[in-house]
Length: 477
Image (tube, rainbow, N blue to C red; front, side, top):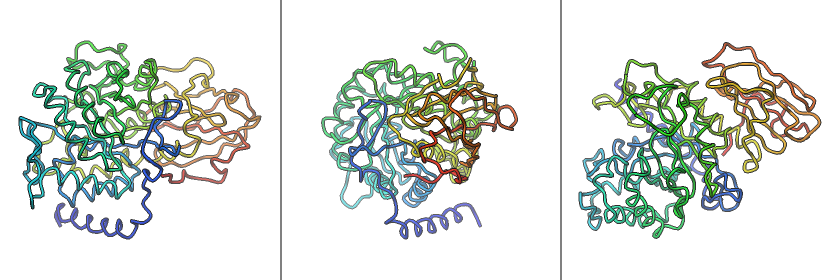
């Protein structure tokens, strides 16, 4: 049986599951639209319900998947815990989808984009948005990829923004992304025009800017009235790897330290929520362009996720080399991608992100702050860097390398603290016991580096966020 047939059968099975479970699917916008929290660090719903962004980079979804494949992909993403898909609405001028329909012309005249009786580009995108909504998933629309900026001017940008804003303003599951892997100082008047045209038409949805690798939107657009939260792209380089990039504004040999971009973003005023919208992808060559280079693995994508979130980010976006471009036999792959996208969705890192979301939603959400003073003594560098975060009565510490660490349990309330190890690879919990409120050294039996990461959880013993008998994190919305 060939792979296409297998995919078709899987689609039918999952579609049946979706129909049978339709009434049980959590629709987050039932809590109201997304807004910035009162402390300006998080995204929440209007009723105060927390929202943890667990995103996937599905850039070419509108261009490369047909209806049945989109249904399969979105259903499987929901089951894996993802609640945001980052897509390119337009990746070229013009952009074509799998059915051969064009989205736009060089003049950006959208007056005749829909024809009676024709299932065109925008009808297909409408369908994808609706299928995502049926799965409780937001679509983060990158309006046009940044590489197209030289073909854009203010008039075209405003036309695109007006068209998109008016078309999708009433959909419950839209998030706007301006830019697209580009430095924010390149034709900022074009991005401003697009953002403002969308916001004029659509008062319902939040917006950000997707920047170039190793940069943050906060450097250019933090003061814009259309900016709701900042996004950075920590990118795909390893420590010390420049690959001809020239100069960029980060400290030498800190390429993998994505927690630094959280700090950089929070330095700007006004304070805004921030997220890593594009870290190193699973199964992509380190540095992108040398396909013989080592590939980023599941333990790498976990490290990027926990470093960013424990550093203060309000959520995280995962990526996979094959999934983001929806590679299949017969399509030319970029960046050395080899697996068909549906096989890539079985990879370890893809299926481990849900444990981070469940962990964060197990505790009071918006009171949480990054607090490295929890680590007693000198912290490590690079892979030995320990990242800590806490609320009033709980603390979480991510240890990637397995090195011993001294943790100050006095940083949260309670004379006694219940303590666990969590394995971020499978969500399993190991209860360590009750500890006095003091500095305690914690170690665990694991090899140094690569797959040895753990999360230490300490909770005021008067609280019951996690039961002592729990052996695994429970699913959260």
